[in-house]
Image (cartoon, rainbow, N blue to C red; front, side, top):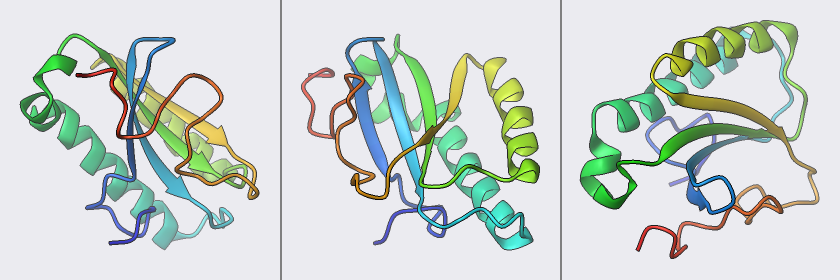
Length: 131
């Protein structure tokens, strides 16, 4: 199944950042931000799915060794989000902070593969940081 905002039921990437000792759940959006209703709805649905995965205990049930780790949701995108999306992301970031979940927007180059390990210490889903 394809990843990205258009597929809210797919966890696009799951990694551990050994440098910060956080679990990183990444979602991808390669399309430009239009400020349109469909893209906004897809972002909301994807964020809801990720938050549910964390808050309903599914993540810890599947990976009990991650119970004490802080979680970060990353929106990895080729394009700077429009003002409407930035406002929505700020609101969600504030709400997730109450649950001790971080939300970050990461601009990546179209030359980079969105699901590749990042240069900040995160690794791919096959990492040994939760073994």
